Length: 95
Image (cartoon, rainbow, N blue to C red; front, top):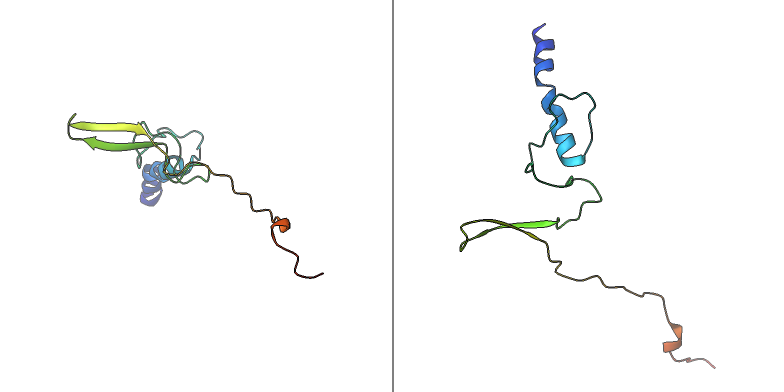
């Protein structure tokens, strides 16, 4: 009886990391909320569709004396690489 009571009281905490990091929804959960990320955090960091750099940058501003949230500026813009071989650029050595 003690073991069943222990499992029943603490089973809710098992679901929190699954929801917070992966976005797995557990039906009939009484209190599904974030515990590992901020409450205003958007997205789920361990999913494949979440970017490596994230969406926002949080930093402390000494002049304002508070945390500032800003959108991320990508360090490198998107470049299209054309890797198809163009054999016309090589001279023909055999005749």
